[in-house]
Length: 336
Image (cartoon, rainbow, N blue to C red):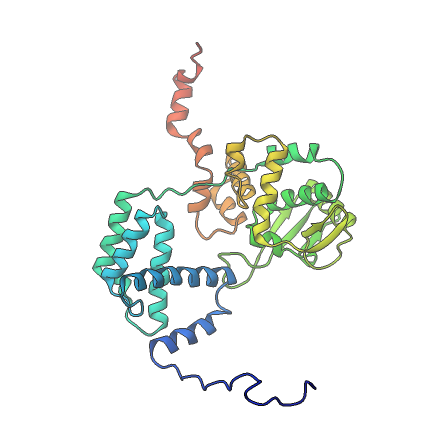
């Protein structure tokens, strides 16, 4: 049958019924979601949709409305998620999403009610807000890999990726978004990278990050051997010799875990390696070198020093008032 010939109704698709015109809160919410496409990062929007779906399923399982939601329902949701072992930071994100959905739909924010406030307060008393931290990949580990990785495109890519990730303190999404046009090599051998849009950079102004001569050397080796002259700097490898498309953020953690395994890191620590490990390692190295907190915060693109302080906690414990007092009073010089 000619593709241009119209089929009888009984052989073709049924006529599409006109869609109802949405009104009220749901229409306002969908309109807000359409506008938000350009205002939030894709990852943020995906997280918000997932959070909303989790809360919706909870409400439907109880036979209660989710839009608008009753503050007591939200408190029950907080208690349910706490019992399920979710971290306080995750539950607070759920609540923030619920609040944003209601505001976007032109409804009163039920999360500002006393029931929700008390539910969050109770959660804080019953659970630890301490979050698991990625095991660091610092310069010591990176140097060990550089010296032992051998030859080949994979070794070239991993050397360059580790060095760039470490010196730029790039998040995994920022690392895979890096393009050749964002790299500038200087006559004296060092360079800089432009991190165009970070997680906390809603305005998209970006930040410039320093690249040492060591990093520039390995980055040039990778670009030369891979023959990459434009587009994404870090690409997938197909077999041993073929260059694929850009890496995705989810591929960074497995790469870093393989690096940790290669240098002989214990299995229990390899499990804690993530796409943030070079960011944690760089922060700890900077703190150990007495780089001031403001400079570390700026280098990592943080809005506040809260996260760099958390990353550098183990380093700072060894330089705390008690640690210095132990050294001065001789308590650390006792040997068995």
